[in-house]
Image: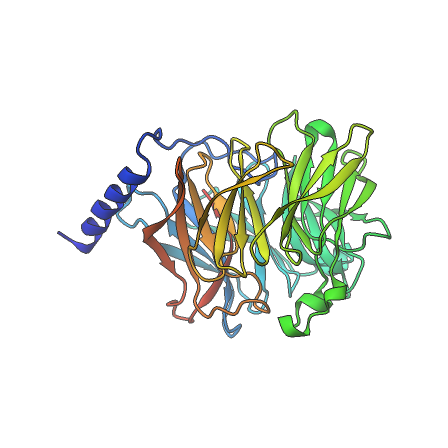
Length: 407
């Protein structure tokens, strides 16, 4: 029996025990994407990983991983796409509304790449590179890429000079700048953005600008982080309310059920998750509802809206919280997939989660980088012992894998 066959047999035995009594996987609805993005209509075949060259001596790149269990190259890196430059601090990315392109950017360089993933999903290619984003928008540190119909809405971490204020900007899907959207004066920090179209509401969160996050952790100024969520009138792009949370509220996640007018954010420097919820009088209340492990860095949802997943970067763990009662969540499962787990991507059927373990080059203390797979079943989360993508053996040396998308 070949090594690959032994691995497949072990994989089947592992899954049989884990998923007993669970229906076969099927594509339903990916979470944590813009509601305007076309959803994947089948189980994923490829996992895209946005990678920073670890020592910043070689170019940053995109890695394509085979995640089709029926493939002979399952669990291997098929291809890499050289981004042409180094030291970008490649970070987050997002699909356009039609899912034909990925917009991706660097926090240090403020470059943005537009990648074609429709012509051949196994071989993405760079369609355009935007080199002058600060000059176009007056902003730096592009972070979240949020699809609108025919447009991309981007949240930025700071001003063109690397300070404050942060803001938002809109571009056409092919890269033409449309407009900048300013934040209220009393909430100058930016980070993530999420929209609930049926409610005509948008929420943005807070982090820190380039002048601070480019420093090593020990030198960062904790007074130069935000602690605000902004509630917006989405159609008019007008801020309505500024709410206070714990320090550094990062990801913002609306409840997935249309009738629910609430959501959550993970406060990285407060070790907590906060609820933002309409109070019936047209405004929102902001309340801490979970004490997490150390440095909750990413926040994801299950497609049925029952669970939140939080990666506790400082505790090496991922927690699963039942938020059926959003004011009184319950911890239901916890796993340790690797050192410093950070970004997560939950699949459309809610049965799998891919995990990477780099946050920022200025924050990482692990010198080893991986992509792991977690299976989610009736008994909670279990780390797949056979799926381990080693990001340390590229010809250019180790790479820091950050954000991920499936296709």
